[in-house]
Length: 85
Image 1: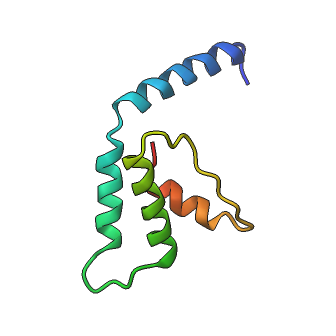
Image 2 (image 1 turned 30 degrees about the horizontal axis):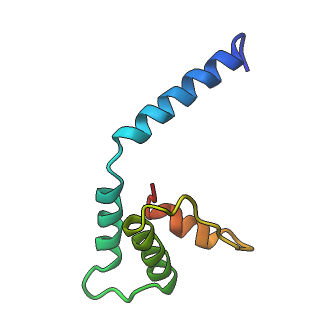
Image 3 (image 1 turned 45 degrees about the vertical axis):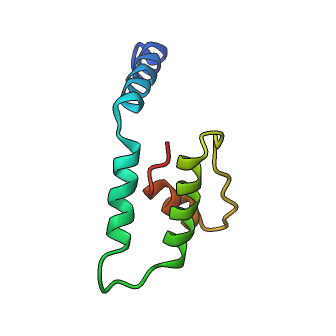
């Protein structure tokens, strides 16, 4: 929308790329992981699955993407909560 949609999109893309370089993904992952492990809280199997997948991706730098086969989008949302790089 507006008079300069292409320029706005390019500027937004540059801002996203810059933000991605300064975001601390490992710290965000650790915070979510710690929140999922709160004392007295039963582990959600989907959280455990997504945490494990993200841990593998962090340890193995060859992982470039996750593929989530889901009919509701639930697993994709849980995985996105983990903030994988």
